[in-house]
Image 1: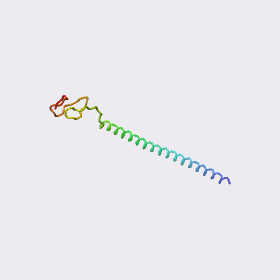
Image 2 (image 1 turned 180 degrees about the vertical axis):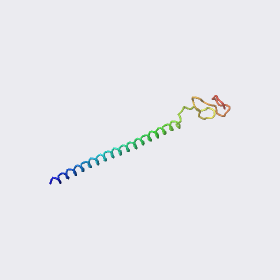
Image 3 (image 1 turned 90 degrees about the horizontal axis):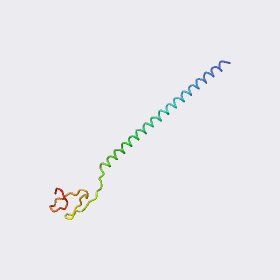
Image 4 (image 1 turned 120 degrees about the vertical axis):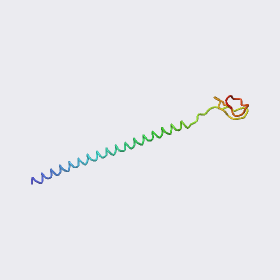
Length: 98
């Protein structure tokens, strides 16, 4: 009757080894899945950052700076106060090419 005991021990040893190998495979698989999700999230973050930089650069290039204006006493048009330019009228009070 010693034989069934020895066979039982070897069988339990094999089952224990298989459980351990399955556990290792599951842990390694979960680690790879988590790493894959992190790479996806990193890619998304990089894409969001690039898109916000593009939007920010485009908005700053397209945005016009507001300037103060003054009205021409002759024709009634508005011209920039910093650098007023002459309109097409001969009697324009602002200097410049008319």
